[in-house]
Structures are given as C-alpha cells and as structure tokens.
Image (cartoon, helix red, strand yellow):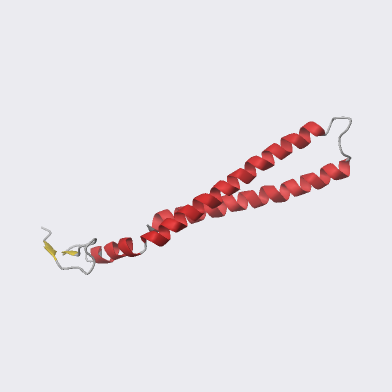
Length: 114
C-alpha cells in the first residue's frame, strides 16, 4: 500500500507530495514548473526553423520545374547558365533539408524536455 503525505511547498502551483514508492516526484514537479518557458521557446524556434526548411524545399521544387520547362524553349539560356542555376539549386536544396532537419530536432528536444 502506498502512503501519501502532503508537505508544504514554496511553489503553490506545484505542491510537494511525498510518496513512499516514488521519491523523484518532487524533482519532476520542479522541472516542469521551472523550465517550461525556455522549452516552450525551444518548441516555437524548432517549428519556425522546420517551416522555413519546408518553404525552402517547395521553392527548390518550383525552381527545378521552371528550369525543366525553360530548357527546351528557343529563347532558353545556354547550358552554362542552366548548369550554374542547377548548382545554386543543389546548394539551396541541401540548406533547406538541413534547416528542416535541425528544426525538427530542436522541436522534438523541446517537446521531450517540457
């Protein structure tokens, strides 16, 4: 049988309850009440970074479709210009994937630490 006793706590939002089988309850309650604001900011920063990465991916897809459509036209730029655009597109694509991946990592870390 588990006995519960209520102790006075300095934080009224998080009363300290001592349960004989779970001595870490006080620590968990302190972590939740003390670190919530920072982790919530971490969640929003991660979500914004992920959204920016996804927007970059959509831009890359749109730019690649435009390059594919303009390549066969008579007034198309020469092959060197198209190759330079593709190189810039590859760099943008890798940056967008990196930003989305980093943002998702920050978001998940923020969610786990709340």
